[in-house]
Image (cartoon, rainbow, N blue to C red):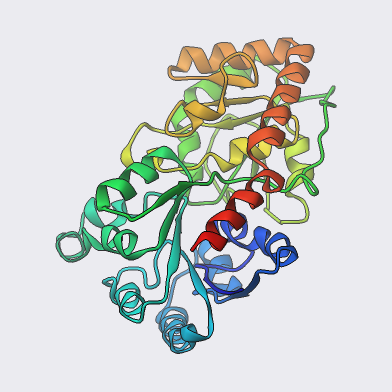
Amino acid sequence: MKILAFTRYGHLAASSRVRTLQYIPYLEEQGIEVTVAPLFSNEYISNLYKKRSKPLTYLLPAYVKRLLSLLNVKRFDLLWIEKELFPMLPAWGEELISLLKIPYIVDYDDAIFHNYDLSKNVFVRSLLKDKIDIVMRKAAVVIAGNDYLAERALKAGAKRVEYLPSVVDLEKYKFSDEFNSDVFRIGWIGSPSTSKYLKLIYNVLIRFCSEHNTHLVLVGSGKINLPGIITEIREWSEEKEIADIQSFDVGIMPLPDEPWERGKCGYKLIQYMACGRPVIASPVGINDKLIVNGINGFKATTEEEWLNYLEELYKDYNLRKRMGQAGRKIVEEKYSVQVTTKQLVRIIKSI
């Protein structure tokens, strides 16, 4: 069986790496051959993370290259689309594929439909508000990373909706239940575009860090202004990210309870838990499902809850170990590629 995977990015972007690329070796073991056609290059995503400009010299060739890729789709049994074919354009590509009767899977780990239906740009909102609904409706299968995305697909009239969470590869994510003895490290991993959420708990971090021997470790955040907090900013790399997470004493994920954030798939929480780290997070979207309060971490809504939970983990080394072990067990049972590959193969072969 031959599949053409239209990813948005290459391996430097978590969404493409996690939702598509990490599965390819496992799919090939099942006789499924995958050809990858990323929209944007690694150079583009690197510049995006460094907050450099996004010139047309990147965008125009990317769209032309994708258009040319569409000329070869009849050579494949199935297409696997990450989110959409052409961002900020109507669903012409997906409608063409549908007319050619070539089945496609479309995968979502973000509420990108809100880029259109909740856009502040009146032109974008009026022209593209139903775009993702059309893409979902034309798909043979919509794969959703959480319930919020699945509900949107059903509302859009999708023929078939399958839930597939974001997961880690346990061959790479080794468990560790050793914690720091010199300094308590509050850890966060993400990208410059999501580092803004840290400011939601800035007052908490100021209060906590002023009273304890604590560092805030940020992986992939880029430059961020958090005065008064001892902050270690580490550049993200695929080779170092697991070791960086293992240096945390607790992994955090603050979020506002808003439409875009409800569509997130909690990947950083899964990474923390896979490494045996307890977690504290806002119970928004799938976070509420990933955390069993008091077992593998804590759900924090108010500043006082955030502060109290940090205090508990700071004071109790054994609690950190127990929660880390519980989190790892949850990942092994539900959130690893070793578990979800079987489901993905079943979906692909059923089409």
